[in-house]
Length: 279
Image (tube, rainbow, N blue to C red):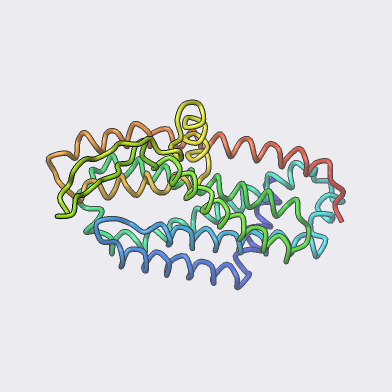
């Protein structure tokens, strides 16, 4: 499989799209860092993942369209080796793109990052690395299973947007308070009495537990807690310890969620790809 990896790296490095996506990743990082005041806006992370989607779908689609996978199978490589080599190639490339993003982001976001302890930053960085691996696995599996380049590119971008939308909706549901208050005033606009009512939209019990785990299993659902971990250190120092540690109790498990998703999706894609006819 080493020959597949060498040939793939050479082919990708020579293609102009690689340089274009690399420059785009750096620019997205610069824009994100420039606008990072107290906290980080996850829109720049989404833009980076959309760049990953375009990069992966177009390269894998090209291999489908030009018969590259079929030729590799004819020369003796198994479908499993082809799948793993493509996944590894795109994982390494996208981690390099993430590094370019961070190189552009970190110096300009110094004001927001400076109060955060080094160990917390290291944990958050690990979470973003594992999140990237999970996203790459989703996008690479989708592109390998959908042979039409244009279709896979559209589906990949829609997947990133869909994951973001799903995480926002789950977060919105989980953020709904259990109670709301109805205030009643007299003619002089003075408060007479206040009534507490239970919100019908409040999620509790097993459904709340399920939604919480689902939100953390969705890679983009991890972005908001990670951003909060950075933002909390930029506010009142008196309550940093209690609040930040409550976040860290959750965040430290994010790499496991990402690893679980990577193994599950990668395993399913591996099995399906081995059963497909390469055209």
